[in-house]
Image (cartoon, rainbow, N blue to C red; front, top):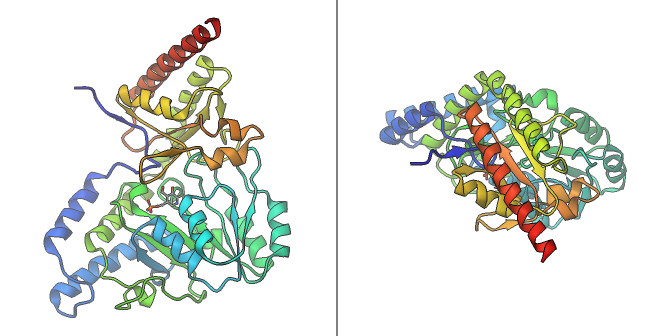
Length: 380
Ligand code: PLP
């Protein structure tokens, strides 16, 4: 049987075995963390232990962490449940930020990015001056498609200087680079377990202690009244375990840059016209996003899938339908024409050198086949 090569860690990380073990044990134990009896107290301890681990990893206070059902809910909570009178987003935010802003009922301004995918600071400063205060600015730490890392600490200083608040979607960054909530200076930060080897359906919103907030989901008053609903015990335990492992292995993650760079060098030899997005600036070590004019992202993904290799193109939504990438469209002068051509390769803890060799081989074959086909078409 063909070995499956998984190179789509930005879609979801492969679960760490210790996480599966921890979750299996917690599913078997059960208990409601809000119950006052012994079983409930044990469950509460499990939740608080995970919260403490995540707080240590993020350099925040445990009481600043609100467990949610994942990055999407965290982003919705931050954007739809604050005291802002207006919103500013970058042009490359995840759909969960864009869609939450669209239904917030607040005026929304979009700050552009440059050709490297970095937020235009001058444009942001101007928008801050023109926005109704208080404004909530939402800018991600690392982009899910390109891995490009924004200068969040500098953005936070600028936003605060002008009297605004900053939400940072750190879903892709957490577990891949060091993320220090205090140093970055955001007021809200979203994280998600499944992007770092934990389970799906659990995440957190970190809310700076001094920032007032109310709940998006109301009910029994769990999570300090900021997110009701019985906590996802096994999920939260798995999240804590995954964070501990990922944070201890950040240097291992950084080493993935060598695989990523080799991949890009080999693709550039095969297709000198290929464009590598964000290659000139700080980006996640595991992420490569590239495009070749005229080569559709979707067909590249299908060709790699036939070769047993899992990669992504564009922004996949829940229906599996692939839409042209708004991230690529926002970046390059010719971004619009390349937004349907980009593919994303994202490496992770199980990636080995041979995976890169096989990807390059499969991609070369696909590239040569499609070039032969377009030459034939031109002759006909
Ligand atoms: N934000 C970013 C940058 C993401 O990449 C994702 C997932 O793709 C999300 C938010 C949504 O997170 P979740 O899948 O946990 O809802």
